[in-house]
Amino acid sequence: MFSTDDISDRFNRVSSSIQQAWIPLALLLTTSIHCSLAKDYEDPAPPEVFEVPSDAPDPEAKTFDRLISHAAPKPLNPEAVTSDWPRYLGPTDDVKTPETHLLETFPESGPNKVWELKKGTGYTSPVVVGDKLVLFDRIGDEERIDCLDRETGKRFWEYSYAVEYRDRYGFSNGPRASAVIDSGKVYTMGVRSMLTCLDLKTGTLLWQRNLEEEFDVADYFFGHGSCPLLFQGKVIINLGGADNLCVAAFDQHNGKLVWGTEHEWLSSYAAPVVKTMQGEPRLLVFAGGESDPPVGGLLCIDPETGKLHDAYPWRAPKFESVNGQTPVVTGDMAYVSDAYEIGGVMLKLTPELKWEEVWKAPDFGMHWTMPLLMDGQIYAFRGRNEPDAWLASYDVSDGKENWREELGWKIQLSPTQEYNMNYLRGALLQADGKAYALGELGTFGVLKLSKEKVERGATAQLFLATSTWSPPAISRGLLYVAQHGEDRVTGNVPRIICYDLRAE
Image (cartoon, rainbow, N blue to C red; front, top):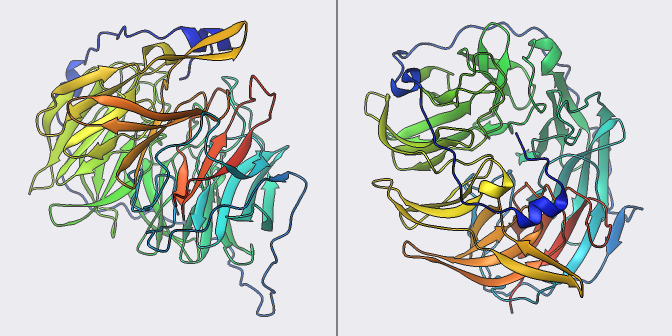
């Protein structure tokens, strides 16, 4: 799935060569699946539900050994618009936030650090609601959920449980799916499909399910990676369980199975989303994980009942491939892509609730990053591996490629060390009328994006570490970045870093 070239190759091998995509006949045809009622799946093991003790005290945020404090952030501008960041891709599941009064310029060292925390393994991002930040990672043989004060990094509570998992390809053994905060509760999905619900205020365990065992979940290439989705009282999971239980919804308060959607496609690494299409909420699941033959594609489901409206096949004809890009939705259209061979496709949901192809983009396939939709254009860092990654702009209406740029530059680490740098398979985020980018080697910058061109604004090398694959989070003017690899210059271990992005 990912390149394993050594660090020097990562820095210097940037190529614009693109594999010629080909699509087998089966993927040229839309499916003939008709609308069907959700299958009546039986819940094999409804979980025990616990209550928060009536006399449970409010935990006090305390410092602990993995926390390093720097300096308090500037006060928020009284006119600043602020927002929570309760989910992996932000408050609206599209890497956008309404936050305002954020920095547009900063020194090469980056915005001022507020605090940093040595973290465990995994590829998750922090999530933030109110004064609480939740981090989900793995330390030793335990998956751990830490609830921190968003502004100081001090810990309110922690919860952990044992996990046995070793990545067969040598990547991180920690969780892939970020936590979700909703209705005063925290939800996590572990690398071995352990679904956990905790009380946000106290950290009390409310319920927990081992979905891998209970539903005989199929193997994953890299462990469970699709984030949970909370919608109208349900925790929705791209499950990939036995008896073609592709998507499952659980009651968010008691963990019981509410409905299941029957389909042969297995769990992917894309997050499910609910968007209004054809006048009603539609659940979109870009499914497709480890299967032989490799199958997958975009499902449109009624989020209330689990009823399947339509399924459009879109998956590279390669066994070791997965679908990882969360759908980009604009009106009644959705864009999904594959980084392995076939690229992307824009689909339209018809009034009959069927997928209809609008255009294809064989060169515009994202591995796991979420494209940014802005001003009628789709912007994204495409590419399967580091050398074939570049930033591009595509027109939503007709799929025309406006431009592509590698955005390369050099950095001088010492009198004798110079590296060719690039954002590679970076992440984009829109806030305060600006586009921020986080490169997979730890570069953070402002990009001026338009249909005509891209310009690099302020740029900082926050650290020099591989595997910076999680998008950053912004809440109340603070920027949270997950460093998943060791810093090759300073030797700093993986960590979460909070930066002050507040403007005057």
